[in-house]
Length: 400
Image 1 (cartoon, rainbow, N blue to C red):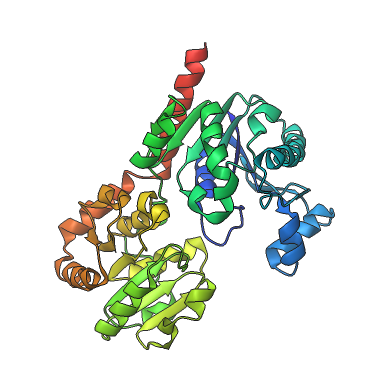
Image 2: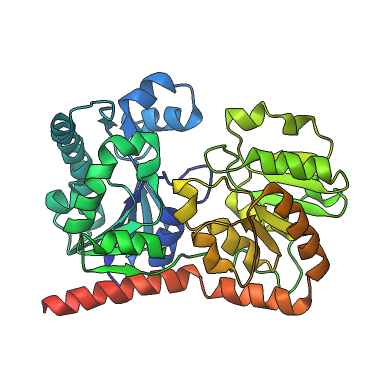
């Protein structure tokens, strides 16, 4: 699929602290098409309570007209910061009232998108909605795209914010979408209940970013002097998804191991005992393009997830990134991680984590490294977008 106009939006803003599927997908699609990436609207609640945060200050300046609302990221990719404030309505317990107010929010949201598409001359566009079942629920009716695609890749309706109304609305947005694409078998089984045009396409990974076949990638200064072995993790450090007990157990049982954690911390991590352990290193949040250098320094990469309904079925993108660098991966055994069982070590307990990391350190051989890289390359963003194109073209052709 080439020379089409796409509108891409989702739960994450373009300048979200951690690289997202939504952003990577938009960049990949823009290699063959024009793309307008639409940020979520600034909410009333965020504007009032977080007004001193840099990202909120930025949005307020844009809303006042002090900064541009439409940014050209590349010759074929534009980023829209809609000049509006979306009313904070998720707290409303009466679903019918919420739906009416959500429609009003979406009507304003759609008008800002339409203004941008008119400025850019977008015609006959396709909308790709990345897992946003509340914001943007009505965009298919309001903007009348040639195709409305819903990407289901995360169990966000199990998170408190989306649970109240999202559990009702996600099946409905799947049902009215022209095409639903998913990244796991669990989501595929769920989506097929509501829409026969639901397809499993896996996940994408920026393997080019994590490719270092020539050995030219530089290891960052804040990790290069940490001694062997480095047991590393990249990503958000949050107790919603990570089992802090696994990290504490590893650090105490293996004081010679250096556990390196790269990413922003929630309050629980900031106040945890991990900060008092000499072999645990918090290196802070890094830009996406910096992360491969840190992964290169790892001797074993880990994903110590807590097992809950959210993590059990979610596709852990970081595992692909670890594998693309050829690193041995030790991860929590979840339903979805069985997908990676041939190229990773899956632990069911904190004790098993220690045992499997020891095994991973001992077994890291060239053949295993090559196999990991091959698996990751098959999950490239190019392949991911290609599957979306194929299913989209099939539906457009069927209409003819």
